Amino acid sequence: MSVVSFIPQIWEARLLSNFHSRSVADVITTKPVEVQGNTVKFNRTGAVQVKDYAGSVTFDDVNTTPIDLVLNQKKYFAIKLNDVDIVQAAGDVLDAYTADASASVQEVIDSYVLSMYTAAKHTIGDDKTPVALDKTNVYDYIVDLGTKLSTAKVPMTNRFVIVNAQVLGLLSKDPRFTANPAVLENGVVEGQKINGMQVVVSENIANVSGKYKILAVHQSAIGYEKQIENIEAIRLESDFADAVRGLFVYGATVLRPEAMAVLTATIA
Image: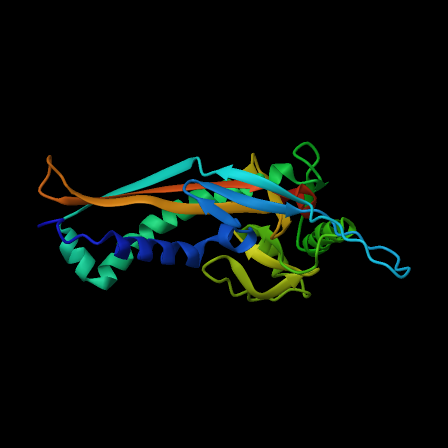
């Protein structure tokens, strides 16, 4: 048993590959334009002015608002192995370990990113007066969420609506939706859009005392980034075993609250 031949790049690559394949956060958010260590930068651009043409042209300065985000959220995993070398050499075994670690971190990060719904500018219902959803009205209420984005002049492309499995079950009973939805690893319901919004399923969307949230969001609304800051193998002093531990750092910020709409509901 030895950790001398431990190759962190292999573990990091497998961890990130497994993470990306399952991450809702990666699907629905925008990435930074610049990364400097644990600080990342996003640019929010202002509206371009359109003017009447009368023989001459004047140029406006590009109006951007830089937003810095410190990746100050930290989660780690630490697993004990009989032999790091054997696990690293056996690809299928390595995948099993990294898949478990990635899935655990991914759920935490998805929950964190989806908690940004609290900044949504547009709402239908609230915790005091939630909408009662059933199979006859759930589709129409989701249409209404998309309409709120359209009224706010949010771009039609790259829109998503995040629902939980119970809401997906109700949608499946509506003839306007598919009866047998195919859900990809990252939660995307294949081929299913409502009012221009790609349907995404996640159990990490908030459930506050039986009040469920459905989030309609444009990709530009939330900025998000994550990194593996460190991954290393060690020989345990208190056991006849090796160990691998890794540290994820991440952060998210709301860039455009007007590009989010949230529905608060109970489910019959």
